[in-house]
Image (cartoon, rainbow, N blue to C red; front, top):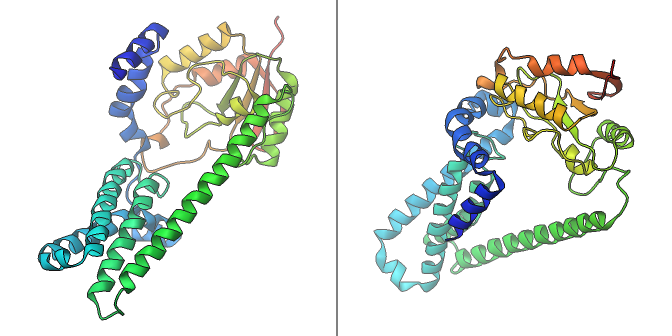
Length: 321
């Protein structure tokens, strides 16, 4: 019922085709080719040790499977210890959750995308460790006390994170209550580099209330990411619905043509051009140029560079001839 209502609302708003494209078409035809990251090799881990975190979840799940299988061979021990039962249930639940969340990072393999699976693996590891301790010659009850301490520590970390997020939410609300929009928003945990903040202040002084802007990159035949935070920091809407850049999308001729049409129709006068990620190359097809330069030609023909702040430029529309 809820899904039907959502579909109806999307149809009424005219957003259904775009939703299907974002959720299914792009992910099935483009995401794997353009965003895929292979599992890190040993040489990669030597250069960036955090890359080893992508293997944390499968190692914990494998260990959990070993513990569960050996536990099954000793069913009498499970029946004899009620505390053992509880830890075993936690182990199975969190190990299963970790395996499910690990699948999210199978295409884009990185510690960030594996974070969910790794977080779920921590309590699974605590439960497995407690079970193993109880099977060794460790003092009686050490496994239970270890598990209790580990889960208490996790609970304190969780409540601490919730508290920090609550503080951030209150800060956001205080900014929304403010009537002034001349200064870019600067709110924890979003940190803005000094040169980027200077560019945003410059841009804020140039655009009128309600005026659309564009946040683009230095080239559009090949893109990695773009800075979409500028729209929120400046409280301005984008001058195109294609405001979130993905390789294979904004690098295509059809989408660049739409971006140009929308920028003209919405009378975009000011553009933030960020060249920070222009030379980022990953081991996938996003590293290749599409050979499409229509949007870059449009920018060079219709906008002038008026200010630069490090890798961030301010462009304004050329005077009408």
